[in-house]
Amino acid sequence: MQKLTLITIAAVLGIGSITTGTIDHKLNRAITIDSLGACQGISYQSGRIFLYGDREVGMIREFKLENDSLVYQHKEYKLTQNGEDVINHPTGIAYNNDKGPTFIGNSIRLNAAGSQWRAVIYNVNWKGLLKTGTLDGNLINTIEDDACIQGTRPEYVKYNNKWYVATADYGDHGNEVRLYDPEKLAKAKSTKEPGVLYKKFTCTPWVQNLFWKADKGVLVLIQNKLEGRQWRFTYVDLKKSIEAGKQVVLSQVDGIDRADELEGFSLLDGDEKGIAVTSSRKNNVNFTSTSW
Image (cartoon, rainbow, N blue to C red; front, side):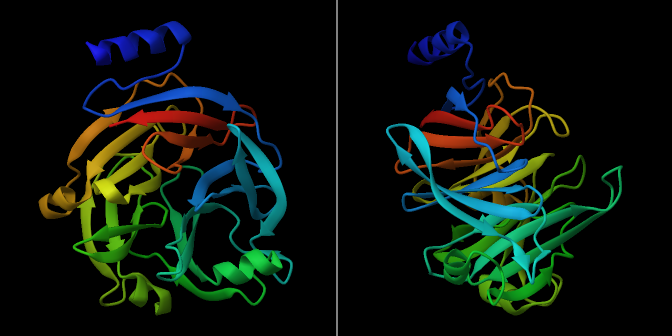
């Protein structure tokens, strides 16, 4: 009865709610944040909110949540080296509270059909980047993600008490979530080098980004329903998915009625409040709530 009430309220207000499964997820309100280009994702780090996009160069801007509003902290970090655009299309920031290297993904479309991609993962000095504002002196290693199928979007996850860097593909066939060993990845030139790839499992298409909910062992696949369009959140049991070799879905949220391109998502402190971002010029930052 309670779930029916949530769905009914969502329909009246014109917002979305879950259609299947046990996790309720709804969109509360949307705001517009400028100067990001097409926003590609969000990284939440102990109260600090980093939105990243592909403006004239790949870049990151820092925000703080104040009274349910995002306040720009007048801090911008350009993903350039010697003035040249290096990470032009950032597609994930894997940050682990100084417990391991920080990685930033870059997914580069090589043809109009989207059948050929170059995926690159960068090992960066995160503290240095935040201090100086560019990759100059802070780009530690460049890794070709040759093990990928279509693109890369790194995110730290924990499996059997060890941290790994997960990533996933964007495409309509052969999609996988892969786990890389962060220590080996940090020094590699290619993800096909021995020992870098640890485990993998198949997943559904159009994964734009990943979010790890550590205390629940849940990996959220942030997806589009169609190529470049509409919203989907797929909550998977990471442990069971790895053991099965394919995604084991706890819940799939398809009921948020938005036609634009969902790019990233993060819960904030706790289980409920979150932020989802899109590549749109307007209403690109969206406040959400989740109930488990």
